[in-house]
Structures are given as structure tokens and as C-alpha cells.
Length: 383
Image (tube, rainbow, N blue to C red; front, top):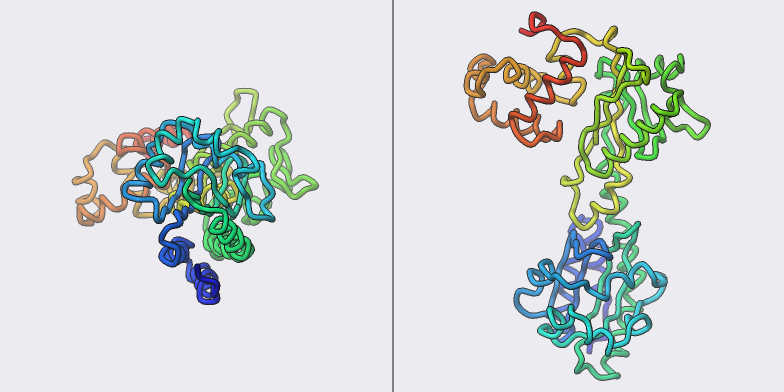
């Protein structure tokens, strides 16, 4: 087995800096050790839910069979029980005999080298989600080879963890909105960028006025967005959690709990988790910033396209298209009315659908109609 790993270390860090992930590095490692099954997984460890996966030297259809396995894999839960500052050996948590008695062994491990133990490096973990690299040891592997693999992973562990941490940090920076203060000031109503726990990052001039008066919302001592009324505070926290967890817009939510008309707010993800690398999304999505917009029907402009643009984060052209669809015209007729091509109209609709979290043209029309009705917009105001 090979002992010079200088070129491998170079590739580990260059792959992270170039945002190529670690699969290329593991591919090289697998080529160097063709008899050693190596895998990378990012998954929910208590469910067979794999976010990202790469497998080498496991044989044909290994990734497909792993992703469609019905039996629980006994190895991933160990990722939440072990010490990530050392190489993990599954034999310290479950014996090889117990592994061979599981349904997962019969369903998957037995057909892929009779794997019954593994060495692992925990790259990152959060909640029930973990990312890890594993050397999956076949039953036939001898003690001398096993010790070499342990030594190899002991050498690689801090470098793999550092590289994955670098990948996360670079992806986090890419996910942060560019020049947030500028585009917040373009929103014609109170708007704030907050973290999922409510910590305020940025807000525009209109939001400053709302927070200064403090009638409904305020900044607490931990620089988090708070609501005066307990019921509204609970609704705000639930909306932030839902928008972050499901990566979808939430609202409108009234800021008055007495049933009277008044201000309300929306919470929207600034970046959808589907735009993130699947192996990084479970660790980044819970921390991605959110946009909170506060509307007062007495202050919001009555132009329906402006309301749609502000509430859903649409461009002016996308808002005009949605406005046309709300009026009942077809997409083709809307394109003609706006003097754009049908393909451009389709692209506008796809973008607007994604931004609003809608699932279809009918769904976005329904959401837009509900919003305009909430604001008391009259048909005569629509152009």
C-alpha cells in the first residue's frame, strides 16, 4: 500500500478552494487502493434519507441500491455517538457478528464485499444530519491491511475535515446576499434580513421606522426581531422556522391578534436550498438568511404589480405577467399584451413560480389573488 500522500493532500485543499467537493479526491484514493471500498455520504442518520453520496470500489449499482435500501443501515447512527476528533471504528459500537445479523447486511453489505465494519471520518454533523467519509472493510480483509487503513484515515482525518469546513464557509459566503442594504432600500415597504433565529442582519429605512415606533415589532436586547404580543411572537417564530426548514415563502401573517385589519408580514427565503450543493444543503439551509417584509394596507402603494413585486420578490416584468394571469388571460395573450415572446413569458412564469413557492400557474394565480384581496386591491386599480 502507498505511503506518500503529498499529492493527495494538495488535491484535498485545491478541490475545496475550487468548489469541486471531495468526490474527486476520494476517486483518486480509490484508484490507489482498488480493493478498498470507500464512500462519502451526507444523510439523515436515523432515516434512509441520503442527500449526497459517492461510492468507489463497491461494485455495480452500489449507489442506486443504497439509496433504495429499505432496511436501516446500522453504521450512520454511529456518526452522532462518536468523537469526531478521532477516526471512528464501527466495531467499538456494534460487533461484526451483529452487523452480519442485520437485514441491511443481507440487503446490501453482503453483496458488496461482505462489508461488516468500517473506519470513518466525521466531516460535519448537525442535528440528525451528518457528512462522513468511510473505508468500508470487507470481511476478508486481514489485520495488517486493516491497521494500514486506520493509519491512513488517521493521517487524512484533519485534512478532510478542514477541507469540508472550507467548502461550507465558501458556500455560506456565496449564499449571503450581495450588497443587501442597496436592494433592501429598493423595497417600498419595511424589509429586514434576519437569521432563522430572528437575529437581525440588515434592515431598510422603512423597517427602521417600524422598529423605532415599536407598536408591533421591535429589536430585543439580543438584536433579534420580536413582537409585542405573545401570540404574534409565536407566529413570527413559527414562520421563520417554516420558511427556513421548508425553504418556502410563509405569509401573510397578521400583526394584529384582535381580528381587526392591519399590518401583516411575509417571510421569504433569500436563497432556495435547492440552489445549494446537495452535500452541503442540510448544514447550510438551517442558517440561510431570510427576508421579512412588513405591509401596512394604509401605506403600501395600491398598484397591484408593485404589491406583487414587493411581496414575492418578483422583478417588475414578472409581476406584470402574474398580474395579467390574475386577470384571467392566457399565458400566450399575456405575452402579447406585454409585447414579449412566449418563451420569455414562460421563463418569467417559471422564475415567479419558484420565488413564490407555487407549484403551478394556477397556484401562483391563487396566491397572487389572495394577496391582492388581503390588501383590499380593487379590480379597477389593475391595468
